[in-house]
Amino acid sequence: MDNDWWVEESNEYEYQAKSEFADAMKLRTKELVLRHIKLFQALPPTEEARLIGKQLLRSASSTGANYRAACRARSKAEFFAKLSVTIEEADESLFWLEILEEADIVEAKKLASLKTETTTILKILAKARHTLREQK
Image (cartoon, rainbow, N blue to C red; front, side, top):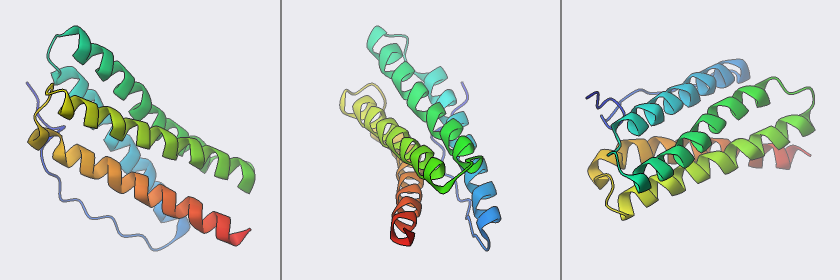
């Protein structure tokens, strides 16, 4: 079975302009969704794993989709609102990862990289939203 979802990755993301930042975050959130899909596919075939896995898959995929929608926003207010949804979904994804770990469904060491990347994306998006608030 493919274990790409838990292998430590060493990609560095450097941003120089807003458009480069947005493009890099689109890619990064898309890669995050793909890693969550691979995790879902690797979950044990138990009822609780499937239930939690589906919740995780919904929130993780919503993170990527809503970030992409935010980048297409027609106004700063719409961007702020979509960015806020993206942050909520990333935080929910982190919650479900924690549940998978604490319920002993998936080993902590296998989730570490994915939790770190989800947390990092959450922090980046929260910082972007904070910056937008300061600009008002």
